[in-house]
Image (cartoon, rainbow, N blue to C red; front, side, top):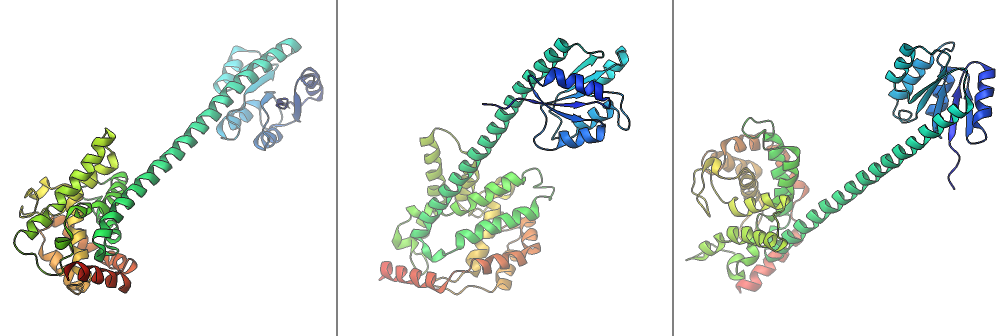
Length: 377
């Protein structure tokens, strides 16, 4: 059973308080304040009153001033205020309504009028409270569903990237490092005139999510090629190059089966398909050049090459950072977007921190070496 509504009666005259309370108390709980300061303290403290009957002419703060403060404070802005006053001029009434009052009753009061006005305002407040609670519930539900969707996206990407890693586990933490490299580069470039409109916070988040799928197409490359410890021969490299198309097509097929394009996979498709393109047009699979290469793929190209250079493999030792950074710098304007190389050089210390934080363990390398020996021996 819901408790009776509480009405706060604010008046500096005891007789007026007694009269209003006598009218209200058969139906409502009442609280009393004899000045504006006390009224604000009561109204602002939980549990808040459901309605305020407010005199205008009081010592200290006037009723108008009290109403103005009540409307301005979030905790009390929803409480309806009814002025009860001897001031009956239209100008006074208009001022009260302008300040946010719900109603205006002139003295001497009529008990039926007071009860009717109070009952009406409390009923309206009940509707407003219900709608506000419903809005809060819906907002909370939207936030919960959004968190679920984001978690589902993260799990999907992690599962797909882990699938590729099981085929090529010599990469170890490669997918984790490159995702952080891409984010670092994007953050450095987000105020650049060429990229400002594109690299919003939302897009940067999606780029980091999508980066781990850059080599998803390697699941379709035969082990004899994927795990080969030496240089490719004959058409082996041509087969290896198809991992870009295989990756893009796998994501497209997944979307086709869903019957819709998924926003967070847009960049995954771009990255998987175009991260091997080069600024001068000598890359693959399409031989794109310059700005024709998606921004997402250009970011991934820097991240991917840098990590490949510094990482130890069963067939090579990793380069020192300085040597890898020099190669990236040398590729400015040929392999890589010049502005992205400049951004890399500006934040290369962060790349070093990321590489150290997600360094491959010796156990990862031993597992990779055993796998290569198994399939090559």
